[in-house]
Length: 118
Image 1 (cartoon, helix red, strand yellow):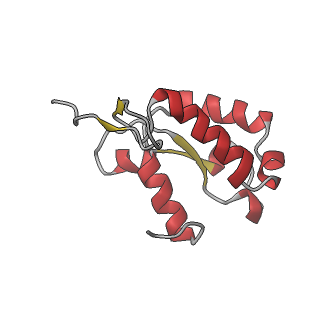
Image 2 (tube, helix red, strand yellow):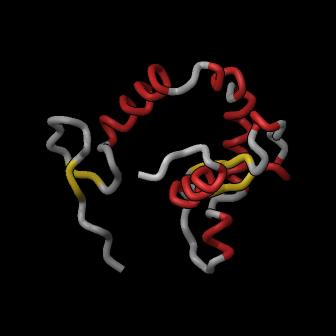
């Protein structure tokens, strides 16, 4: 099955082509800018080094999106989602986590009312 054609990087003025939104060069920069300037600073406390280790172990054990698998599709998981959000008393225990692709992760947060629909 052929890949989708590459598209221009969304970073202003970048001529590189990529399969994602940003080229490899600008993906790190945009993630850093988001974490430094847009993400709530309180989340750094909740999602520290312990979360990163837990997330990495969970994604290694569950490499495919759990929602897509239920529908019979095999999609690589990119996010680890808290079923019961941390702000509502959820924990980082594996029974409260789900490996999801970006699309399914956004769908779950839209259903929770955490994100806007554009």
